[in-house]
Image 1 (cartoon, rainbow, N blue to C red):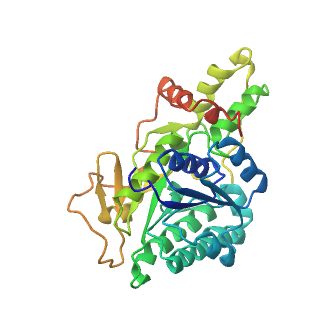
Image 2: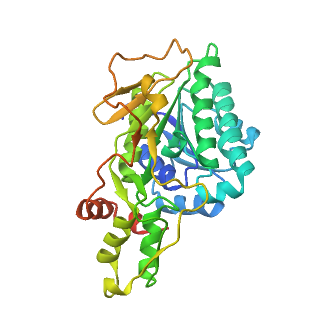
Image 3: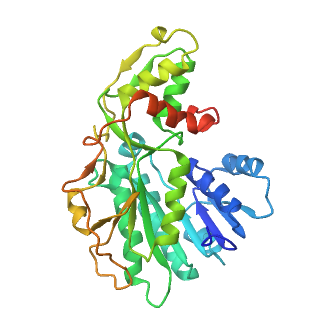
Length: 339
């Protein structure tokens, strides 16, 4: 983590599930200062209580929609981790322009401020829903990715490097299915399942943070880093968690099939077929290079082993025991105790 040590960091959305873990990891790895920008006052206060080393933590109340606030927040910053976003699929379907204002305009505001302050690196945090999107949230996150990557092209004399990471469901993240199922089980059910055969990519939160820091260390600017990850079936997850966590008999907990919500698709994609031509494969990730001409982007000669899109439908889903082991590794985060 030499790329972090002694640096000044800004984490947007730093009170969220991933943003807060990035903040804690950065402090542990020797960052000089970590500024956390978030529009949730209560969450900022909670983060202050959780982190002992408040001498290196700066909590900033503000919103990425506010360009003036970002200019002050970025003064003297070396590295930006951009985790702020509206990410709940159904809510974004009903409030599309709010999604645009945060995920698109907010990202551009941050890019502009980062260029004005000439930060060293900028890592945008994206989602599998940005790959060949079918939802408002996915479409805005794809555009957010493109804005970040294109900044490498028009940055002029500045040395700032811009890249993104893309991953699937993070165990225990705010609003994710595992904490929801756990709370429903603790309440005696029913557990609401959209479609038992629906599949999703999954990864522990510590691995998601690993990818973010790895991207910051490896990037030359212009890449989208896609972590390889296992998949699960939603129905299997519900049954596994009922068996493991039911307060009484698992037979007492019913599963209620409610059907897909607006904007949801049955299977997720981490890589679309169109992206394969610009993708190279590494042992634990794929790297997507941009279509636009970036002379600073060090394209590699390796090829990708995939012949068609990387989708959760094609992978063999985790069996119940491995799925439960992955949940248990994240302890209270996964179970939603602190949600």
